[in-house]
Length: 68
Image (cartoon, rainbow, N blue to C red; front, side):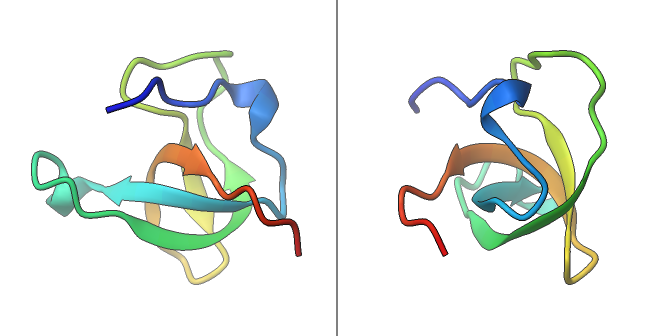
C-alpha cells in the first residue's frame, strides 16, 4: 500500500478513507468526513487516527482528491 498521509495533510472536514480496527489486515476501507483528529503526533506508520462525523474511528489511509 502507498504511504499513509501525515497529520498536516488531514484537516477537520476532509473527506478520507480509513481502516477501522476490525478491518485491519483485510484491506477494507471506509469513507467519511473527519470530525476530530485523535493522533497528536505528526506521523504514525499505520495512519493518523481520526473520528468521522458518523462516529466511526479509524486510521487514515488516504485523503480523497475530490474537494467538497
